[in-house]
Image (cartoon, rainbow, N blue to C red; front, top):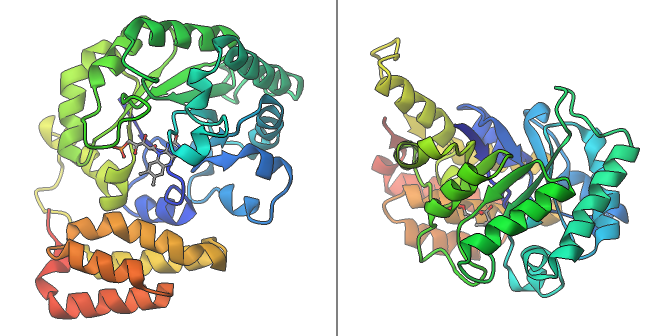
Length: 340
Ligand SMILES: Cc1cc2nc3c(=O)[nH]c(=O)nc-3n(C[C@H](O)[C@H](O)[C@H](O)COP(=O)(O)O)c2cc1C
């Protein structure tokens, strides 16, 4: 199965990708969601959402919006940036997104309206010359879904068929309903069912927190034909997870060339690298909130995670966050190195 970084607003940006890249890229990097109306209007911060380092050819640009016109326009503007293609956000259930008709609202509207949006995007891409990808197949137009308002396997399947008829060529499923938070586990059997039934690649996403989880998921569901595992929060806590998956697989197949263990991860060095990548790739106005969001997950690697997270959430500058981490590792030096 292929591997993909999930689209995560405020997290799946260039600085995180640069950090992940040091260990090993996934096959695909989904961008954080790009708000179609703002992108089309040329908003001040939009250029920061479409930075492509470190692997432009692996980018998938995710679009969100409540209306078909701006979504189609944004698609035509994003397609020339290259990468693997586009993804339409139909899974985000954050109230301020869904309430305005975007994200999961597209799964709850009349299916004809959603099909019309997809068909318009497809038509505009075709007219702009993006009917085929550089590799020759149809230009990738994916959607990222949840289960919907409730569990309804037949309804989900027929909704996916409507999307495919309208021009969708890849589907990602995060198998939770609209109102479910992370407390209830993702139900991968729904991903497996879509993979078995649908003629397009189906990616699964949800609750893969480690390389071991990824291997177990692959073992449990591999036969259904799931095309890729998408990892979100797990890749923020463990930016090396994609590399680690490859390493565990190689070991399982007896292909590890060297018996030497890999060097340890130095959490202080990782933190400094991330903060400096953030400073270089994001506008000043975004840096504090994005640093706080990253460390909310990354600090789960530390013994006193709760304590340092609280301090970081109250820090007033990215430099202050750096200082807090320096002090933390001064006080808890045994937390600094992670050995494999
Ligand atoms: C902070 C945050 C922001 C997210 N933003 C998006 C987004 O922009 N688009 C999207 O489709 N999903 C978004 N998601 C959902 C993730 O892509 C993913 O479906 C979810 O976290 C489950 O995967 P995981 O268990 O691997 O994290 C977001 C999740 C988080 C935690």
